[in-house]
Length: 290
Ligand code: MF3
Ligand code: CO
Ligand code: CO
Image 1 (spheres, rainbow, N blue to C red):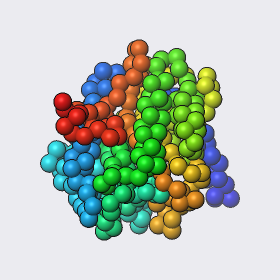
Image 2 (tube, helix red, strand yellow):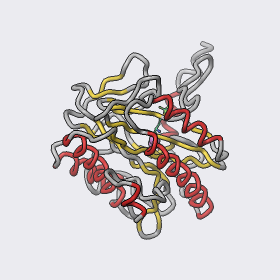
Image 3 (cartoon, rainbow, N blue to C red):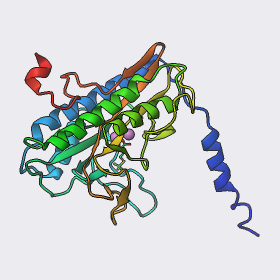
């Protein structure tokens, strides 16, 4: 019966995790997140100049690697989920093109005119994790793609704007879902936002759908991401054989934006805001800094 003792252990650990209270952070943590988030945002600002027809996804990866190295930061995705002989995720960022929903590999594939791509970067600076992603278009996107990107950004911002002490997690999901669906788009239910701080993925899960007034009550000092994935067609995803890449089952276009945020006394603070105003879609550098 040597293994008997081991049998109940895993479920108990999971139970503990599920009921674990959510961390509340103070000013030092907010400062750490502001610095890490600001660096991630600056990195994503630089990606905007790179994204042109003919560039390979691996060139974006190299840029993120170099950017991190020259700013004393580490990309959190490198080696992520590695254990025993398995080395985990191998890249400094995720690049998800067109119908790829998330976690696309920055491989040798090239970007083409009309492609849309999400670049998702998490930089660790002084132990704090800044996690953010944006959509970029190569050349002039098709009208439908442009609209999808707009809706995904609006959905994220509406989710974020629902955040204040006393609000509930369901308010965030409800705001995101309602907007996406009112625009004829779908929410991907297989992925969600997450607590973040000095670890990459923490509790709670931040679902991109839900009912207003339901779920965990938000409190000042909570830190998490809001990162809805929105599809032009249906919301179902399919995993590719590489075990990472998620694509839309109907091969419709998918778009995502992500910010790391903190709950403040009267609302929220976005840690991953672009100093150049480049986070919102369709903003050109000249307009943003004007
Ligand atoms: N950055 C993603 C997120 O928003 C996680 C990517 S994990 C990876 O949570 F291993 F796929 F890179
Ligand atoms: Co995230
Ligand atoms: Co991310």
